Length: 341
Image 1: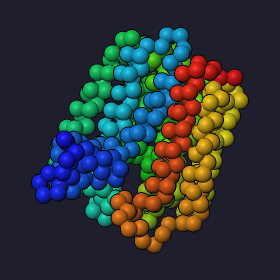
Image 2: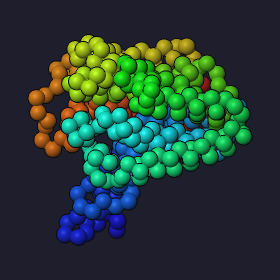
Image 3: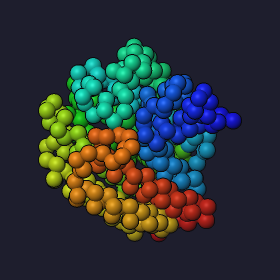
């Protein structure tokens, strides 16, 4: 009943939520509370973190010491951490004067404060509340698993906040891309695995690298899209430092490196052989590679919702497909108890 259109053709709630999750933009009509929260937290990209958590859980599920309660709690923790990071990024970029109606953040989707969706105080409060909930989760997991949980959480928080926050502003110094590789790879996957089982073998760190590369490719694509704006603002992202042509080549290399590292992890015994089903995403990788070679169109296609982002969407679609297939392979390995070589 919730998805039935009401009020002279206004979309139903489920349709509104799907729209936000597909486009990062608010739906037509009155903005309900859930849709507003999905827009504010940029929930469309949260599946990237959910995939990292799923990889960790599937690697951990048959290991000695695995506890589904602590795994579930850590999974919720990393998703909330990603949501809090999105809120903080908007807050910090606004405070340093970067975000504006003419900067891509305010073009591909409404900026929470600049659009009037929420006040700056409200955005800061929302970020604080989410971080406090995460802090409570951290306290529980630390009581169960010990100080290493704190190390993972603090490292993740510092790197995530420093991505945009003064004084480090890693994004401005060409360090945002390595930041994402570390956070979405070893920190998220390794930290969630450790919380689930209480120990962390080197194989899990190795197994986290392929997905970390996929997430880094998405950020590289986004920063390639933003070169004209970032260069003008003195934001020295890696694509600004490399130039567009070389940055697109690096993004292609990151996509290719995903497949190389998956195969290497299987041979090294870090991933079970069913993980090779990720290679089924190669046609999507080929399309992404071709789009990165062809360059950006002069104008967006009809009904394209997130312009001026282009390469970010190309990389994101590949990351979603390849990441889902990697998870599917790990599900098969978990169901049939297939261990690494």
